[in-house]
Length: 119
Length: 192
Image 1 (tube, rainbow over the protein chains, first blue to last red):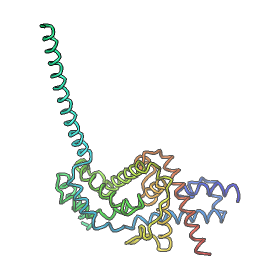
Image 2: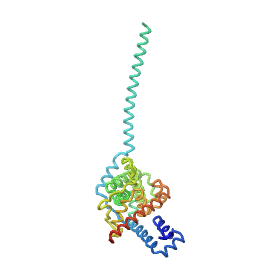
Image 3: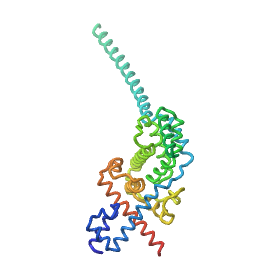
Image 4: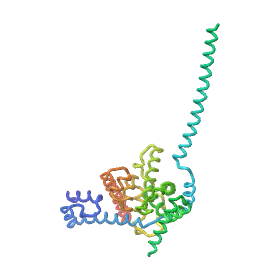
């Protein structure tokens, strides 16, 4: 295979028209049957891929009901927020409990010290 | 006034009502666009079950965002963008859960994968083409589908996939080349 053919055929997958190869390489394609055949394959590939846009698959019957269910569910971030709020509540309760225990402990210690001093 | 214009006006009314929180109006939009959204999702993820989940999530996302839909694009165009983003989110989730890049995983095509129900490419090439398309690594398939099937520009693809225009062009090049090799091999098998 000629160097020019190699260059042209390396570039063909990335372009939409032989004109994009530039004047020199486009002129080569005009005279080279191998490059014309390769260009035709890519043209055919693009055309067939484009025709897939006209094809529509039938969505399963379950899709619309599933969407309706989803529309009535809270967003994921809202659920996460709720979970966070629950976690926050638990953490705050634990912190409050710890504060009460600490305060009671401090009061007992102070009381004991005072009693000790008085004795 | 053509039937398409009437449909357009009806759709605008449905969108306006949906934006005000009318679930019935939005459900009507879902019924109208379910097949095209499901098709795009299926082409993006190459898996019908997953396509169902992607399409469902895309519509639910659209429902939550429809108040911000300005109407400067068609509803279907807007839905396409949401569907593509949702498919990419699913891809990222799967990547995280599988702890490996699906870009290097080739999918076994389903026996009746993406067989068309209406219109489209000639029967001779359609099967092998879709098989080859489904077998492409996801990163390449996404670019080929968006560029060659849905006619997105490289800039649009780059923006949605968060890659450069150059990267989009490189993926398109690699994707088309892989398809061409796969289809040529198929032709050889038929000839032999």
